[in-house]
Length: 388
Figure 1 (cartoon, helix red, strand yellow):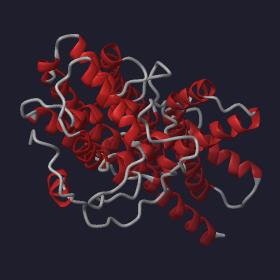
Figure 2: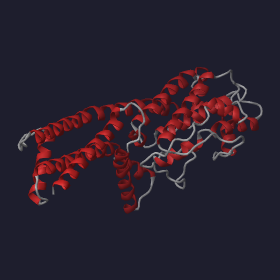
Figure 3: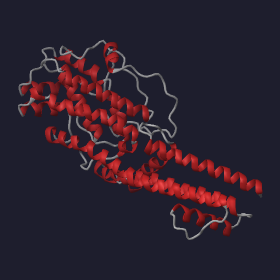
Figure 4: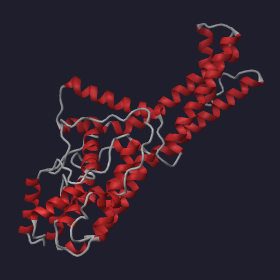
């Protein structure tokens, strides 16, 4: 029996250390470090929500948006609850190994009471002996740390979410909802602010930089939905990246370096998120095809011409240049859009038939880093049009 108690005690200590490690990697470490326990708890919530949709038999976007919006608060709370319950049970096992002599109901119940009393610092059941009291102090410290995480974690999470949504809402005011790249350019021209597009690209460059950092440090935000059903961070990313690519390849305007920087920032953010979620990607081959049809591009090109936007003379050359640019980010947006069930515009590349990517609980070994956007542009044999 003594051997069993020693083994249970050691396993309990190792289990507590593993849970604490998961908490630190998820909340404290300021970088995207995968934590399987937290990821499993969060994904379990979304699997349950998907099961609810299947059982009800309703799959329209309004219903999916309403159901998955619940995942925003439930996901983090599921993580916190998982950590709390596991810590409670593991300390209960530790107290049992220090106090019990048999495996029976009363001894297990006493271990649970000691663990709960110590974690919540209630003190209604005090252990006797130095080792047991040290275990109680450790349980109280872990319980207070978990409480501190709840106090600090959720405001940080929702503060980052609010910061993300502000610029998305501003985009819909300018380009409508659902937003698209052609709508962004045409509305800016009609407002007489086409020469001031720098005021659009500069904050979006900062937005993409913040997106890549925050959505890998706090990957729960990837699944947080916008307050309005037609808004979404994936859709907004597509609209801005398409707007940058159209300006660089289809519009006959002076060199637009800020749009180029915004495009590169967006590519970097999407690749960072894709790497964290183990979404396979690589620089496209020269002349790679895209899901967006040339017909839709021509429609947008003609509309821009009709309202007076200066465009390139060779429409086909503009299409080839635009296709080369969009090939760098279209696949990533399609996977992320389908995985997060994002709303779609006429230019969106994800559909209900797009395979849904499920992030693995364990990230596979890192492969060599992909080429930078500058290297990828040179490799594709296209420099983005005459403006570069």
